[in-house]
Image (tube, rainbow, N blue to C red; front, side, top):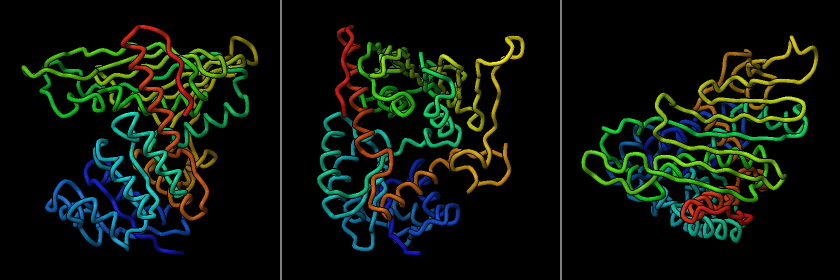
Length: 367
């Protein structure tokens, strides 16, 4: 086993998840590289010290520049606001350090393109944090599709819906300002990534993007509450994607349904340890969706638990991400999803905004 010093930028919601994951990943997966929580930096020296004490890092940095430059920091995890991602990543690659970056890749398409250029020019391991696609259930669905379990796929429907801004009386907060913080910038990347992972590239799309509540507490909202895309995948399959932060009753509505000539499959993150599989075989009277509970027979489940049906949770997805990042560093080989997958998502979302503006179908550039 070899230690590797981890530098974490950002200590809030996702910062904590990554700190916990790096502390646990060696024990869960018996990784040859064992993270050492070396240094954390947040929005101020006081915040950095608070997170250092809470998460068990050896040192607190004054700012992200100190973390990136420190010789004992050998890999960098970015869990800071998306407007900071590009500068941190470019500096880390210039310093010869692998980077794991939370989604979205940057605050704009230009950021994402620049970050991919910097990553690939450096030749260093790079990954982006699309955690939901790593559940044992969704990994199993990817296997089912690859094996042709539901025949030729004919339709995909996906959504990422939550209700944290469903109440029109809820006051404005930071999520209400700036395109990058809107629903299309915040929630849609996860489901666009899911669609790409399960179905392949999107060839063209037609989108609509709307603000449901244009003011909150007398303050104007300048970004979107929900959006939808009709899509045509490069395979020729049609699909529909919907994203909302105002979907009353939905807490983690990362869900999809896929139809094929020999069956169908559906999944909902609110029941993340179950896959519903329909096989078009046998007497019509006995056909129906089978609820399959994940267990040791499914990808990345056994390291967490030996009992089927016991389930994995949100934090476990982040631990799987940490394992993948360490594997990329240890092997020197790219591990999906890299920054280029983040760029593919950014191009899809940018194309959706262009379509929403002119009402036309648009081709999606390849990443």
